[in-house]
Length: 294
Image (cartoon, rainbow, N blue to C red; front, side, top):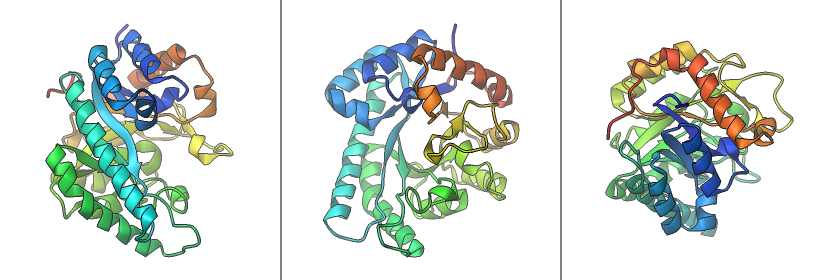
């Protein structure tokens, strides 16, 4: 059985699968696209990962993730910037290795408040500074940096960028093919400005990836692990997906699920259930069913 041609699974959904197993699971389940994570790639090495990815026949929707550059200038910040440079290189190599339609998109999570700091504005300013430093290198590599705003409950420890407006404002000084945004339903469903900001992102050509999963309460004790299959919660996939489509986005739609119960399930079962939930909750609202072109 084939998955929807625009469906991509982020391998964080099957967190405990190794690099090769994750590719095999998705190919066996009829997927055509995948969002990769850097840690499994590091375990096998970039060159080997690129070869194996090429052989899988899958295309790349995104590489997750880097960013985390809100700290003040010093050795830790320099190390973070250097890590982002490596991630840009990895994204370019993997996109080149992937099937036709692969996108060289590196997802950026800004980072939270530095330990002991309450300077939220200063932390966001340092995100802007980091983008200014990295954008020329991303442009030279043909990579789009996708700023991902996270739900405000993560502002202290994970991402000081909480709204799509904030992400778009940070991206504004740069060419849209170099700095864009990630539209993630889990993080943005609540935002009263989300629809006009999606429209703005479309006008500016900045939607680098569209990620879907559901929100359901009560949240898990670890709120990071509170994502659910599309259709199991309160997210308006019809409205959000229609808005993203109307904004001109034609790329893969990535399902990314962090959930302890899902991680404990058989990987093939997760792949099948992800495909089925996407077909029911998201696919009916996609304007185009064809796989994205190169």
